[in-house]
Image (tube, rainbow over all chains, first blue to last red):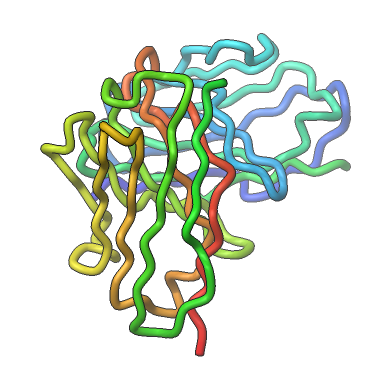
Length: 108
Length: 120
């Protein structure tokens, strides 16, 4: 099974900060990596697909990148509405999807 | 409006059964793979199952295989999850999700979720 290790689990930041969240896969996922944002009591929202593709309607301050089996979500200039929990997900095979443990971005 | 609406959750005793439904609208349901994802209270997301657009392929996470079954009825634009032999650790919000086109498998559309509580 492919394991996804996401870090940090909690991140304290201020409005305007540049924020980086990392996700490492235990084996190759061939760029089939997505990032989601979830706010309390709401379903997740797709931000990034295929490691770096920006989902329609998502602000351009969100970006994704990859280096081998390490993936990064960057928020270039944190906005008040960005305080939320973020999850990575590998979807390299329809037979087994895996989420990371989540990163809560909280106000410093 | 493009949307997914889940129903069927509730309180059930350990060992009991439930059938969750997800009604799709605003898009051609039969074109898409679909998924169930759950989230235990205060915990992270866990993928539960996927089903191919025509229902011919189904996959379940190990922890539910043999107890849960994903299915669909394209004529009714509906996705289902049959939950049998329920355990306390199955308590969660269950979301249905569409596996998207451009995203080629990421969950690009989510329902609001339905709560399943397993307790005596």
